[in-house]
Length: 260
Image (cartoon, rainbow, N blue to C red; front, side, top):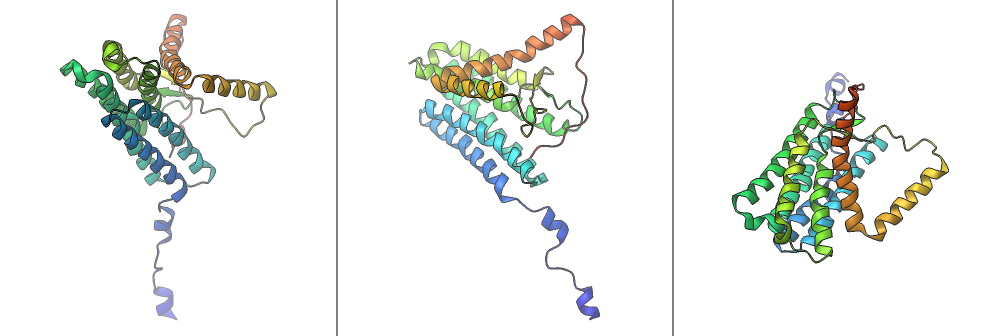
């Protein structure tokens, strides 16, 4: 009896709690695949498909953390895996797409602009992971990498849809790439929307507005999505200037819960 009591369990309960949860990480893997697929399509010259894949990766990336919270399957592994997936889908993939589409013929200027974006995404993700307990959860410090990737992919998609090639607007594409990369590592605050509780009841007008937004996007996805994310990227600077003119300063909220 003493021998039975002294035996250790085959699987340590602590190790079981730190295991890998399947459901949220399936979404993360799907987002990673979409980013990888975007890179492959860009290398094959299929830039429109590559741009669409970036937007698909954005949707999947937004789902994995929410699924983890809803199913109570957050884990340190999931958080690290999500960051690595984001670096591929929203860092390396958009930089490569833009370089292959518009910046390739600009020589050093082209690959430097692409690298600024790629490095900005890496620094943005690293800063987010280290500042997650001190930053105001209502705002993002710097442009989120998915939104920056949407700027790049949106420009490629809308230009391709209108028959405009990358070399024709390479200087505009270069400026937007650098802007997105620098915005990610800036201290400009961008609204996060994380305090919105989807479990609470909302007025009927909110549902109508949501339906109208879906209809607007479906009417012309490339132009509407690019316009929305361009406005979002500008909103941080506009609100920052407005706050500076009013002499105000945004307060820091209590620490936010870590995302998967």
